[in-house]
Length: 38
Image 1 (cartoon, rainbow, N blue to C red):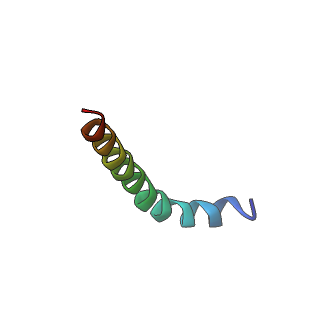
Image 2 (cartoon, helix red, strand yellow; image 1 turned 90 degrees about the vertical axis):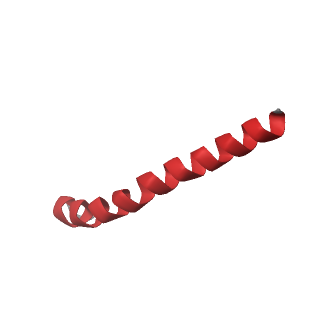
Image 3 (cartoon, rainbow, N blue to C red; image 1 turned 135 degrees about the vertical axis):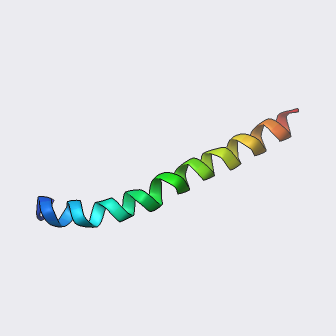
């Protein structure tokens, strides 16, 4: 880590984009998996 304040300021918007993206990907994979298995 280069600097706590720098990584914190940069990490907030990144997490704000990553977290919904990860959950949407998991939802798509889960929906696709259950649809294909049935």
